[in-house]
Amino acid sequence: MAAAGLLLLLAALSPAALGRGEQRGAPGRIAVVGGGIGGSAAAYFLRQKFGRGVRIEVLEREAVGGRLATLEVEGEGYEAGGSILHPLNLHMKHFVKELGLSAAPVSGSLAGIYNGEEFVFEESSWYIINVLKLLWRYGLNPLRMYMWVEDILDKFMRIYRYQTHDYTFSSNERLLHALGGNDFTRMLNQTIDEAMQKASFSHKFINEVVCPTMRDYYGQGVNINGFVGAVSLAGAESGLWSVKGGNKLVCTGLIYASKAEVISGTVLSIEPKTRPRSTGDPVNLYQVTYNTMAGVTGDTYDIVVIAAPLNSKIANITFKNFNPPVPEFSSPYHQIIVTFVHGRLNTSFFGYRDPSAFRFGAIFTTENPKLFINSLGVVSPVEKKGEGGKLPTQLAVWKVFSGEALTKEQLGLLFSSYDSVKVKKWLAYPHYSPPEKCPPIVLHDKLYYLNGIEWAASAMEMSAIAAKNAALLAYHRWYGNAEMIDQEDLYEKLKTEL
Ligand SMILES: Cc1cc2nc3c(=O)[nH]c(=O)nc-3n(C[C@H](O)[C@H](O)[C@H](O)COP(=O)(O)OP(=O)(O)OC[C@H]3O[C@@H](n4cnc5c(N)ncnc54)[C@H](O)[C@@H]3O)c2cc1C
Ligand SMILES: *[C@@H]1O[C@H](CO)[C@@H](O)[C@H](O)[C@H]1NC(C)=O
Ligand SMILES: *[C@@H]1O[C@H](CO)[C@@H](O)[C@H](O)[C@H]1NC(C)=O
Ligand SMILES: *[C@@H]1O[C@H](CO)[C@@H](O)[C@H](O)[C@H]1NC(C)=O
Image (tube, rainbow, N blue to C red):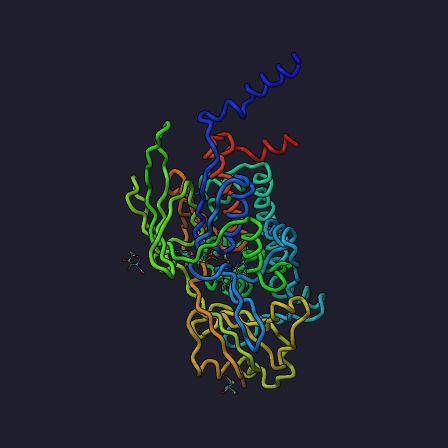
């Protein structure tokens, strides 16, 4: 008896109990604006942290999945938005496993790098020939790049340990700093070109290998910031994968697993409200106004998480009566046009008179104003991922990335014949121009914003990381667990803890 009493006393004195200045109940309702991977992962992690009692609503104006979407070509679905995942994208990997989905390897076709006149690099199906070709043309640059990216990736991976231990950050800069110190935050201040030149990579290598990779992944050249540049270089590694049936299945799966309710509507405005209570302090809530098929309506929530890019052209949300006001985010998103063409490539366009000699199923391009495409490649339908694609000379579905919509003339140049064309226009990711400053995560007391992290780098895994960070932040701020937020030297701290 006495022992049990002592234990109770000790428990009452424990730091966890003392840290919670104001003991409060769980929140009643949480709104998540946007049902892309960021919003659906946020719903999932919010449920994990806040438990079964809270009501979670996801407000989505279009289809769940957002920038993860498929487009139908010749009766089959193809990945039209975010497609490729890295083997070390651990949240995405965990989701796929947890939801009973399957991961399929991204089938590699032979790659060529075209400069507008000729192929400056042609991949061979012989591994050893590729190694010799790379050594011959770029010396040790490719190997050094691999090591450079590994070093960044190594530090980046610390986020998973922090998040497993429930630590969170109140700004994107703090998060990046906790991973890689000033080296990481400095990467946002310089272009990938500057960063790699400083690390003494050759111009030729930067122009012919690094730049085409950026053009493929982000539709922009080597003027994008060093961090997003490194993320795209990691996307050129081996072991890449995607979700069988379509990446968007992760979003629908997470929302289902989180038992959140999806409301079809466009959020128009958010406004703080104070409601008096008969007992004790007044409650602070957010009035969220949204447009549905049935007209303009709204509701109040204890916590709001915005998981859509705040930009007048995307999530055009008005923040009413905030004091201090929520800043305006006007930095532009970059337009990308994805064109699916079922047809035969015009190999003459790429300087191959004899189509049978043409082997490339993935064509990257260097910076050349004459070029009207960023990249193109043969793709497989989402249901047949990992089965190996068609040969480039066969009738196949090609996915073409460009900055502007392709004209009939341009399609006629690229393809010797084609029978169907499907186009998807995206405001795809930030238009990067370092020095980059990420928008804040905390917009107001209990109003959080996920997509600021895209200004460091836009990728599915980045949204998932931001989602877990925001869910943890919302939780720790709700319960006053200040010791879990913005801890310095976490890496050293957690090292000794093990
Ligand atoms: C063409 C393309 C290729 C890409 N390739 C890759 C890749 O290979 N690998 C990779 O990791 N990433 C890739 N990305 C990036 C990746 O797709 C995004 O970073 C990620 O999907 C962003 O998810 P999100 O949930 O943060 O935003 P979104 O997916 O944009 O979700 C936001 C959601 O909010 C909704 N919404 C907006 N405004 C409102 C409103 N006012 N009210 C209600 N709902 C609203 C939208 O309809 C949308 O569903 C690519 C992106 C594009 C476009
Ligand atoms: C990056 O640039 C900003 C100004 O744009 C500056 O405030 C910040 O200190 C710089 N960060 C590093 C790590 O150099
Ligand atoms: C954004 O919303 C405001 C207020 O509702 C409106 O006046 C404005 O025209 C909208 N902007 C765009 C680009 O749709
Ligand atoms: C193919 O490309 C060549 C070279 O650019 C061009 O002259 C020709 O018109 C294109 N179209 C066809 C159908 O060959």
